[in-house]
Image (cartoon, rainbow over all chains, first blue to last red):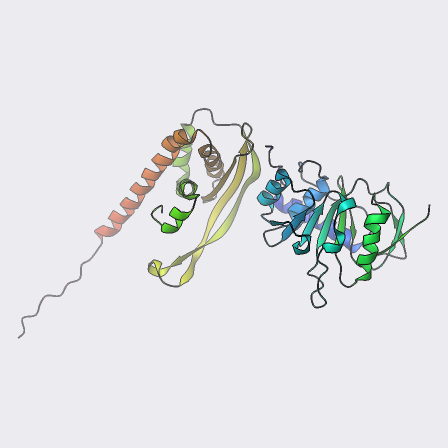
Amino acid sequence: MTHIATGFSQPVFGAQSAFRSIMEAFSFPGRIVEVQGPQEAPTGWPSSLAAACLTLLDNDVSIWLDKEDPETIRYLNFHAGCRITSQPNEADFAIILDPESAPFQQFKIGTDKYPDRSATLLVACQSLSKGPVIEISGPGIKGKRRIEPMLEVASFWAAWATNNALYPLGFDVCLFTGNLALALPRSVSAHTLEV
Amino acid sequence: MSSNSDLEKNPNADRAEWMGVLARAHAQSLAKCFDTISDPPDFRWLRQPEVGAVMTRGRAGGTGQMFSVGEMSVTRCAITMESLPDVVGHAYVQGRDIEKAKAAAICDALLQTSRRDEIWAKVIEPLRSEEKERHLKSRRKAGATKVDFFTMVRAES
C-alpha cells in the first residue's frame, strides 16, 4: 500500500487560495485559471484537482468516483471525510478521470424548486488547449469565447448540449489539468467550430 | 472508561483507551515516557499539528439533560511511518502542546504495529497509573473537606 498523499502544507491559506481560483473560474466560464495545488496528489491526478477536492469536499457531501481505487478512497476519507457512493444519481460531486465513459445522463440536475441540488463534476482533462475548438457563450462571457479542452465532441459535448438545454437545471463541470482549471457552469452553451 | 458498556461493544475500545490516556496525559510526562522508546520511527506528516477548540458536553450527575460544559483547546495531527505506510497515527490531545501531539500520534501509530506491547509498557501503563494517582490525589483533597451534617436527636417526647 502506498502513502496517503499529503494535503496543503498550510490548510487554511491553501484552501482559501484554491477557493478563490475556482470561484474565478466559475465566474468567467472558459477562462483558464491557475490553482495552487498541494505538493502531492493521488496517482494520476492533476494537482489542481487535488486542490479542488481538499477545498470543496467535506463530510456533508457524497462523491462518485469513476475509478474506485483504494488509494483515492483513503485519500478522500482522510482529508475530506466524505461519503463515497456507487450511484452517480446520489452524488453531490463526481470525480471523473476518464470523461469519455462517464454516465453524464445519470448525475443529479437539481429540481425546479431547488436547482442547486445538482452535481458538480470534477473532470481531469489531458489538456485545456489541444482539443477541438469550441465556441462558448453565456453569462460571464463577453460575446463569445473559444476554448480547446481535450474532450470528445461526440461524447462530452453532446452530453453538454443536453445539459445546457435543461437550464436552470443541470450539472456544473470543472476541468483540471496540471495546475490549471477551467469551469463550465450549466449556463454555458457550446458550439463546435469547423477548423 | 473501559467499563462503559458502549465502549465494550466497540471494536476500537482498545484504541479508544490508549487515545484517551495519551490525550489526557501531561505534556512533560508524555515527553519523558516517549524518550524511553528505543529508536522512534521515521515519520512524515499527513496533517501538520493544528490547534483548535472543541465543545465539551456533559450531563448533570451523568443522567440529566445534556448541556455544554465549555470549550477546551485541543491539538490534532496525523502521521504515517516511512516503513509502514498503511498505518496512520492520529492524535487529538488536550492543550496546545505541539510536541505532545506529535509524540501521541507516533505512539498511536506504533501501538497499531508489532511494537504494541513495548509501547504499552513504556508509555501507556506509566501514564495511566499517573492519571489514576492524579485522580486519587484530587479526590483525597476534596474528601478532606467533606462535612457530614447530622442532627442530634432531640429529647422530646
